[in-house]
Amino acid sequence: MAVATSGNTTLSGTVSSRFDLFREPQLSDPYPFFERLRREAPVFYARDIDHWVVSRYQDVKRVLRDHENYSAQNTIAPIHPLCEAARRALAEGGWNMVPALGNADRPQHTKTRRSVVKAFAPRRIAALEPYVAAMLNSALDNCVRNGKAELMAEALFDLPALVILKLLGFPDEQAPAIKEGAKNRILFVWGRPTDEEQTLLAAGLAGFFGLCRELVDERLARPADDLTSELLRVRAGNDEILSLDMIASILFAFFTAGHETTASLLGNSIIQLLRHREAWEKIVAEPALIPGAIEEILRYDSSVISWRRKSKQEMEIAGVKVPADAQLLLLLGAANRDGEMFDDPELLDIARRNASRHLSFGTGVHRCLGATLAQMEARVTLEALSRRLPAMRLAANQRFDYLPNICFHGPREVHVEWPV
Image (cartoon, rainbow, N blue to C red):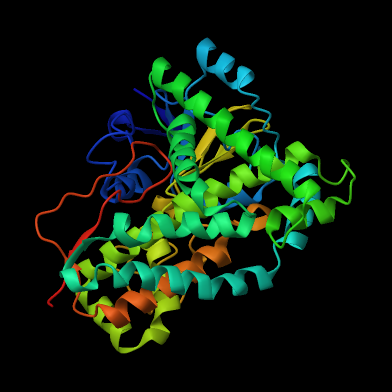
């Protein structure tokens, strides 16, 4: 049982020992437990995953912004150590990922991010909006007469994958590999796979990285109008600016950030707006409310409920001493419902004035580069669904399933129905 000391007060390990985001009920709805953690054990050591868990808004924000005392290098390292067979599968598969953005510290992070920002121009996001609308409306055309749909499979899950394919320059036929690769990465890094599963996932990820490296080589020989080509133009043949493996690593990182998290945002948005019928009917009547609704859903039910850091030296968080070289799990989903920051935090309020202060995209120099793209996809999706299916409702008696991991939170299926 983990025990943390805060001043002269000992925090009971009763609540913290029950922390388990891999299983129900916390897997599908972690928020009631998060509320208890904020109140009873805001900082504690979770022995099972060897992480110090932090749940209050100000503490989480402070760690995310303190680059002098906390490193991002463990961000996408597997939660559970790799078995020897998995290490071998990575090596034999040509895995050569290098720290790029989310898992890099200064000065490397500053240099790489500056190069990516040059390539990831606002015009690229704006140019994708008609494509998003066309793809979504085409999917809806195929199901609108049926009176029901499983929205993730029929309209929403593929959409972010196709968008990221187009952005990076992959052909559409590689969408299945990308979707599987994103899922593999989540389970490999943030899940609890057996040694056998870990080895299979490692082989799949190595192959996925190979696809990224092949695209880099292809665009090096034949540039096009896509992000990969633009990164190569920024590189200008200089490995000191961006190496080819660095560009492949950036592409690899964009897949999960650009696909799985956005698909989860879309699914979470539909569930929460239809559960809170008044909010849904407000955006049906007034689509201008949709951007604010998206910010509130990001706060209320984030598709990324935790992120990670590593202490560079012994630190004190909320009165609890955290040792040097300790891994930290920052509960973004808990911070986003902290009553010290948000009034009535358990209430979904699409007109909330400070909803955009959520931490779902991180904060500071590591704030998610794809935030604007994800918000655009969510806005276009909600505009189309609220316009074309205003009477849509959640199908009764369904259970929402989530991929067992401690970071990404989004439904695998969402069944809806409407009168025809």
